Length: 315
Image 1 (cartoon, rainbow, N blue to C red):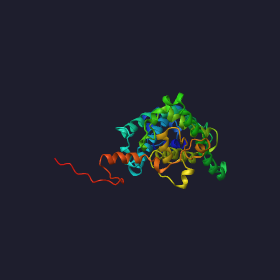
Image 2: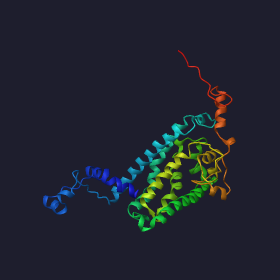
Image 3: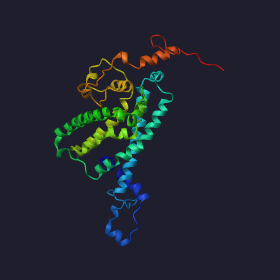
């Protein structure tokens, strides 16, 4: 968020606040004393400077809302239309109007998650985190090490947060809404109870208050986390690949939605393997099998899953 405001203040926000919250008119002498002509932007100045807390709060809420929605709509659409196998929508456990429900659930959750996260982002912007600007402050070695540490930290803590959310005393209150989608689409990426989305995001927010991280690197890592959340819901059941032993792929997360108590990890499989909750993808576990069975019963595909041309209806 520190980087976002650093980029958006001179581009957009300074103008917006100068328009909506202009500085009180000054006398000619006072203006001359305070500014030289070249220092005063043509659009004026705001009564709220960049360090004003009210301005920062409003900016954070606007940026997080617009940013989260933009990432969601752009990349969920990309994943849904170009990667997700839409034959899965014939699965017997795919809900009526599920895509619409996922969208509504996601968009309902985002504003509340942003409100819950506001104090953390405000702490970043006001300089209370360990974000730093110059790579040379810690060196290139630490720069790359911090990225690896970020992923390991997230993997461990999100694993346990996620697993604890499946405890019967917690599950029905917080995590159950996300498991409404047994066969999820990419549109389910943010379809959480707001408290669920917030709690699972805490590890990567807290990280910068524990370890130094170069601020532009952190922005990239933060965006990648959001994209990963979308893409692991694309239902792709690729199996038999050597990477499946190490990476918590969309196939692993598909099995998590179907079987509930397996594959809690975020990026990698090591935590699930070590803590005995790993269920590797297998071709016979592919939900597409049941979807194709339903399609075959409806006369949409043959025994081999090949499409059967449908007769056009005539008036």
